[in-house]
Length: 389
Image 1 (spheres, one colour):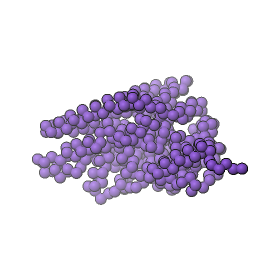
Image 2 (spheres, rainbow, N blue to C red):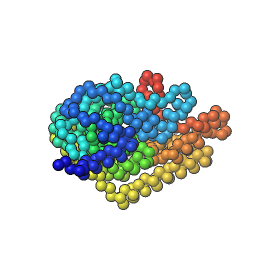
Image 3 (cartoon, one colour):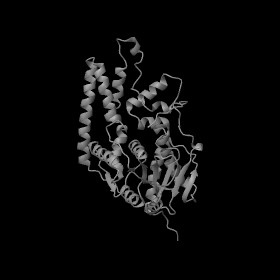
Image 4 (tube, rainbow, N blue to C red):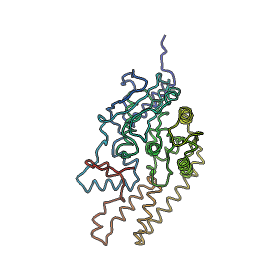
């Protein structure tokens, strides 16, 4: 006789998917056609657009507050508008690998950002993906030469979203990863989308927080990143340059109260994509639950808050004293270092700096907020020359 209810793991997965669906706009599990296609699929075309890949959402989550405000200011002063989606999915191709059997709680998912242009599954990865029941998706034309916020980031988001539309996916095992320059994009996405990604695989590529690249996201997102996202650094022992970047990045994570960090060094390898064994270990680590030491996190956050408050107060004092050039210089540094944690105060101070009552020319710009926003122009409709990374 068929059991009256679903197994507890499946019920939990359905509940988690429903909660995430409220954010992502996913179809209910009952409305999905049962997927029949597993294994390696090439030249996959997707058609569903994710709300979280909307250009306005990308700007909010992935640019610093002053950069985002500058984008808005440019658009306000022009006849152009922010395109809703920067990607035409009908023209894009993805590679998709689906293990033959879904775990009871649903598949895991790895959205992978490559440094290369073709959509491919790295050699030997299939066995590890099968072992942990993880779907792999990666886009073509999303390599290092492509625009970051106009292509690479939304392509990864759209790939993940469309997989979630087609297959049962476990909310607790949605990861973003990349190799080399792609790993740096993966870190940006993990920071900006902690409500989607629960872990990031940084294979031979990383950046330090507080350097402006990547910018820290809005405060509520960064708190979620601190509490729920696990990072796994995976680099070859002969790849000295990227091991150094990893060390700086890891140290910065601790300074910024991010403690769920694993660092793996693969022996006898240089700057190359992870092999099957290293990948398997990294996937196991990504699946480990994030356990937060509440007291340690609270102390660390308090230290950051004190430093930020002092810097904002100093900028306010400089502005009040009429030392506008010094205030502007400090505000740019605050935006670079603290990003979304400094908003909305940083944007308010910038608006005050842009409004000089004694100068009619600058007074006309009182509504302008922000400094030059590299990469922002690429999201305006009709811009043929997006910024490069």
